[in-house]
Image (cartoon, rainbow, N blue to C red; front, side, top):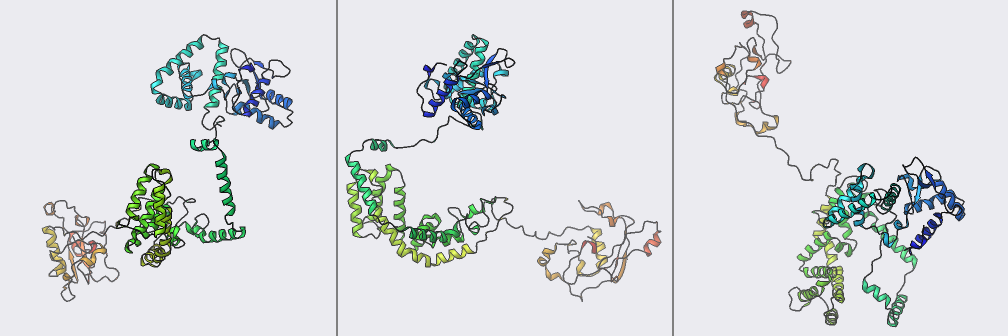
Length: 596
């Protein structure tokens, strides 16, 4: 390799690596690495070297006794693109002390950190377009390359014709080359883009770290250091020396006190601070919902934290809103509004500072304003003087209202804040937060809305009975009002028994029940059925319905008819009987106690 092609590198380690590669690639067999031709690798023999050759050379040239150190140095040379494996396997990019992989030196044109070998996106698009135009079996794009190629075509949609034209010219020029030269150029290009556009999951060695960001005015001020800048720095350092410095023991003591006070509010230190469950440990997100910026009822720890200091109250948006509601009742809402407007101005854009300052002074500091705040004359004079001096300089007006804001802050802290903690609003808020249920949801279905309970449906209207049914009912009941024709002959659910009309409840004296009687079942006529009515099994021929009130064992006793044949006279005399139990409190007839 010609060392004259090498240009000054960007970093010191790059120049050392390039000098190392130049020494390795010397053609003499004494100082350089000996290249050997492999027969069964390609149709044409290509010279290469193994991992053992490069590790042995590094150990001999730099007196390295540890094999791992030499392998690590050779791996860096491979990952930076100064040597490349012929098979392009991921495992081959880690150089090992064996002959499992073969390597070649990269051409100086494709070395990294070179001005004439830039790896911009247009060149990468031309390279991928060229590979897509060639034989897909040998030069086909990998999935990550195809995805990158599609994105580049969308980005460079206006240069698509230029990319395709350049790729076709390079393909036509490659056809004129010899087979061996063509293979070597393909390997070198593939190794170059493997370093600059690595596959997903591989190390990006060419990726630079985060760059420092400085304003141009700051850089210019650093270059223009003169006598005045040094005097200002000396004055600042002298003031720093005059500041009172507390003892380290006092600082540690105050830090421990602060830690003990706020430990119960930290979910990482105290498990009870993350109720109902810690979202960093479990998948329950209820903690984020109850500790949102604005909620209907804040948590108990959140309300207790407001009582520690006034700063904790105003930095919490929920606490600031509650405090604002309290000041509205106290007719001192202008104080907190002034404090909020100044905070918005200080954190707002630079272009709106001057307009915002004028509006705040006109709204809260003017004597004719209905929302004038209680500021002493000395503080107001300082603010007005700063306004006149800095008029037209918005970059210097951001903090001119700090004296008035600090005065109002101390006024609210010493006067309004203690009254807020003693007010009924804060006490009721604590009680509501204490009684707020925080239960862990095992099944997070829906959006947390309360489901409406379904009530028991009202009783249905009585269905119409047929003439045959009315005759049977009248024969059974006689003159009893329980089995009246107008009485619905179906049962209700037990949940609606109280909803029934109790005026129809008969007394025991009005009941006239026949002790024992028998009804011979006859097949009903088709015309006797109402529309939609189905025939019951008890109404089929051969079935009997009887009642027996003298059975003390159970309320109802239904006996299945015998299977052997019985004559008609015997059936009439030996009919099976059923017991009849009359309800004592309401006129409800169960399906098994009578006909419907």
